Image (cartoon, rainbow, N blue to C red; front, top):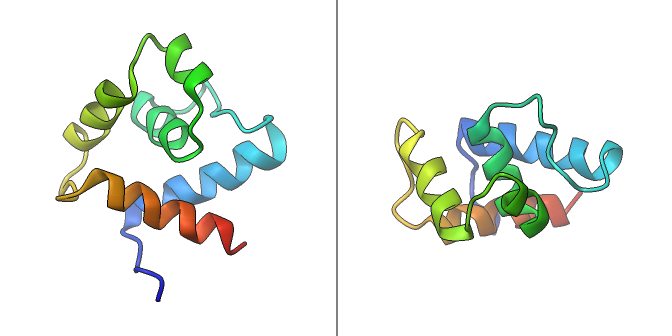
Length: 88
């Protein structure tokens, strides 16, 4: 059973697809900081996070802080996006 993604997760999923198809799996630097961090977290892009001078924990905190209604469990939220991405 696949969880229903919230609006931001759906946007992040689309950006992950774009990053994989067009940018060697890296977020586009033209995107907002939150979008870049979320995509980097989903794709486990430590190189991009390092370039943004951000640890995984800091990135997750920043993404959650920028959300209107952040998930109770960020790891579960990221896993749901990864699952949807894997089923493409």
